[in-house]
Length: 350
Ligand SMILES: Cc1ncc(COP(=O)(O)O)c(C=O)c1O
View 1 (cartoon, protein in one colour):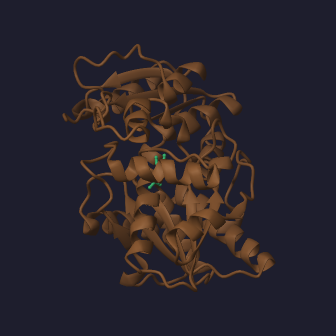
View 2 (cartoon, helix red, strand yellow):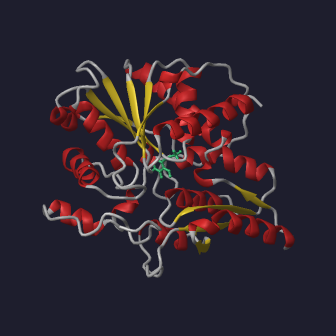
């Protein structure tokens, strides 16, 4: 199957804008900082998953699915965008969500959890250890009932999902040609790895010359994250019949900005959220994009980029998560100690 003949349903508003960030650039005093606004893809509250879902949902429709089955953490952006895509296409959706530790009030509907309910997703909340077995049981039950469920793994980080970011790199290539601009680096948040896999594959396949930097959002060894991204790139190359070579130095992952783990909010992440909001009026989220921005700020401060470099920050969305994090964010603004760093809906203890 060739990339340009892949079935695709249009879900995202594309191309997303590229904007210069003059105030942040001045504040950091080094390279020129730009943003690509993938938070404006327009599916629910926007975000990176809309691009992946264009190919994944096309496959679901081709397979005549009537139900989408997927899952992730309690406040997952992936679940929000997948529910939105399913509803737009007239499909039902089952979300298996893992997370809240005992004692958390699951009736506290806020952020993405509220959106999942608003979109009429059928939600099951489980302990992390029961996640995969619950997905399997859900698939079996739906099939036994005569339905045609289509399963999408966490984050849509398979070849068809990565195709969305391969396409984003092509879009970027056209945009920069029109703007007469060359980006040296692209910094983004990397989790399940499909976004990074698509970006790296696209950068190589379309010869953009852009170095892709991933900031890990969960506590993962760098090598493990790179391995995960490499596997998705390989799967993508085979499935889409692409011909390019990825060298070791094309795969860059930093795990220094995670703090205490996935979803953990640190002073650095809270500061990244505040800095972008107060310099440029752009809202990022405390889990993903704040980690990537904290990474970009630190690399700029350490002189990893030259003053001549153009650095593109990929805003992958998720700002709806600001609201469940309102207590630590308020404390950060008021210069008080953070009341908590590990959210109540996370399985991890403080
Ligand atoms: C806002 C946001 N940014 C980045 C990512 C990471 O993307 P990926 O899972 O493809 O690595 C996610 C994943 O859920 C996300 O929600």
